[in-house]
Length: 122
Image (cartoon, rainbow, N blue to C red):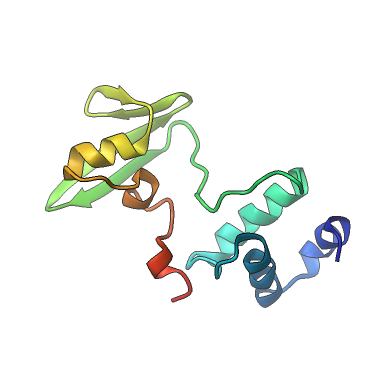
């Protein structure tokens, strides 16, 4: 099935078919939050079927991310050009995750925006 046919068939696809399409594009099972992620995936395909698509969630400026870590709550605000945490600006969530944990973490994974490989398909 070519891209045009895939796009035209998206509205009629059931969850299993969308999941299979996800596996074809990413080589992994769909994430746990399948419905929302598959809608984002379908929307991205409709906008530009040839653009690379990430399975990291898209977050809008103004969104506030809150993460509990070792009994403390951490708040990050998303901006157009970075992230604000504790009164300072950072270029990536990974920088903030490293500050909080003291170890190398994927920022999107730490803040729940990306599903880890070990949790996929559960």
